[in-house]
Image (tube, rainbow, N blue to C red; front, side, top):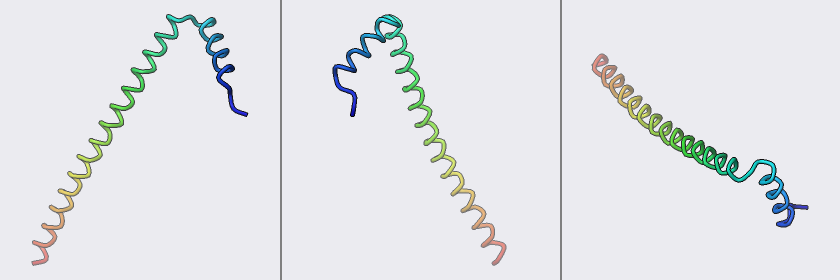
Length: 72
């Protein structure tokens, strides 16, 4: 029940006729730029999370050492 190769070619031909090759090329470039931006944002977010986790561990260590100093 899937889409055959012939059906995909017909759909592609209709899309090219409706939008034209120049507009499709621009759309492809815009889509590629959006994907690249998304990937870089995800990478930056994971780096920020790692930095925040590292800083959180340092804060916890500082709090634990101060608590130990007070108890002694």
